[in-house]
Image (cartoon, rainbow, N blue to C red; front, side, top):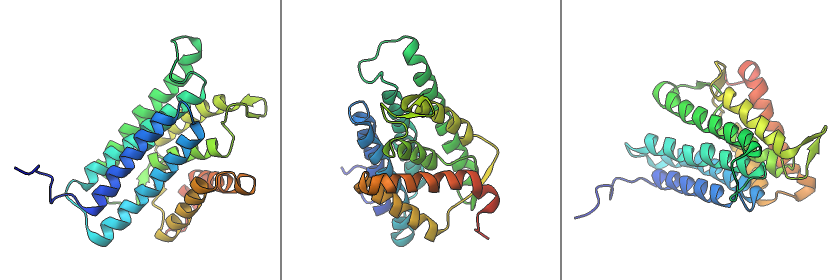
Length: 235
């Protein structure tokens, strides 16, 4: 007897579950290669956009929306939280203590907010051209871009604040932003394509031109977070 999903899985579903697997790999390598983990999260963001393209071109299955939310939890919620926890210097061999409290709390808040936001999006916003709160994909992209750009890397100091501390603070801010009552427009196809190209260049050429691509990605993501609720040209 064949498994019941044989013949029901679409091409878009395959891309989606691949994204979920990428999220696991990102979380697994975060303790030893944080920048590689960040690049994998960005690769997952590209896959997340690609599954929508494939679904529109070839169709999706009835399970597509559920699979997409599950994959997002893996790649854009759990993996970034593990990344930040690893950046804080506690990694795979941590012992409970004062040094672990902040990254544990920040990561826990990020996971709780991300899961709640994904559930609310699936229930209320999925068919709209706007959504309330910062998207989990965007939050994960920001955390990953900060790492690849060197802002949150171990040894980095910005205005007297060390990189891992910036990562923990950014995680808390983004956890709040994911649940904030602020309306964000969905990206137009052309803008999403440009963002995907910058993400791809960041994944492939993270150090090229003095980290120009991750810095550009960081600027684009921050501009969307701060400006799009009022100034995006969707109409």
